[in-house]
Image (tube, rainbow over all chains, first blue to last red; front, side, top):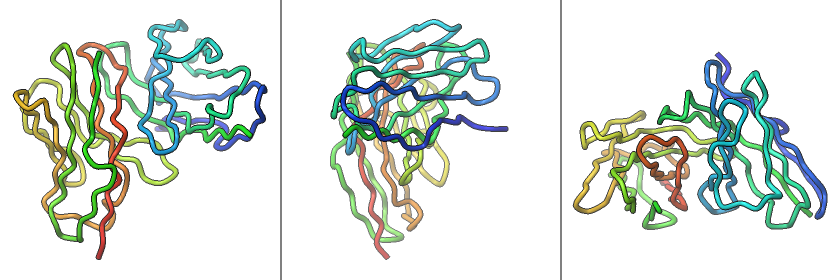
Length: 113
Length: 113
């Protein structure tokens, strides 16, 4: 049973570029949440997708957008990259919007130069 | 709004010594509380969670935590540290019925021989 997978593992971009990160949830899970973990900080909630709709959103600008596909996989898009967007981006999956345990993927390390 | 405060960004113990990692929370509703562990270059792994059942919660790898409402605390303990426990530990809180998590800044546990 595959857990949460994320791609790519590492990514280097320059300021102003756009990036897309991908996440496949754990088998049987239908809810995907994205978190940003800056160096030395705890993860911060970006947004959550369920039934292909954004259900909750944290305090992140509109440059951060997402999508969920019918197979429950998800993408995180960041436009107009800033140096401060450099972080580990974590995807977590769970079952339903109720408090099912969230399973985290290994993350994508984004470096913005 | 909910928040989590983890006291001590670094905690050092000797192998075999008691591990105590502190977490205090703020929540306007009865919270769900979690402890996660993160090993280098990996995602987050759930150690244990409190969801309003028993106040003393046992988790994996010999860890346990006690929910104390009067102190708004959820400290993590382990009677005897192992070298393999060296990692970063995050306390998190969630509003009841929601699966989004608010994390503390983390505590790095260092274990010396």
